[in-house]
Image (cartoon, rainbow, N blue to C red; front, side):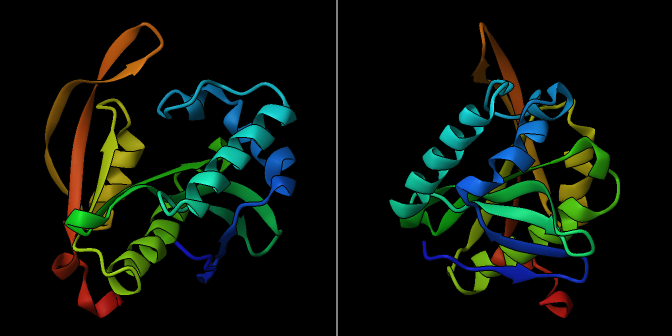
Length: 183
């Protein structure tokens, strides 16, 4: 998908760059953040650059999108968000995000995700957007509910993390369900 940027009252969302590695390393190395991600905790800036390069190659191939989430007031990168996978034949995609622990509970996730979701339904012409989270991830449960996602069910043992399998809860929102007053 082509590069876009978004602005909200408090945030700027823009394309990831390799220069974001130093800002993202503290986030991607924080066990409290990565425990619900599909990556191992990172330990070096080189690993962060490699992950950004991988994400950028997936974006270039049209498989995903990913944006740096930046606080406008301080110009600080506080996380990323985007679509992990596009299912073009079904006009659907899977969304994900992560934020610095210092930014949890302030509404930044909902604010950023709303822009991505709105873009998915309008510019990308998606019909369905889904999210998959681990059952213990209460903060994501709350953010998705706030955005109007419906909890559809539990996928048992759906994700292998290390040497164990974990359940995932699946949530979705359809294009007609996004609050039209917020568009």
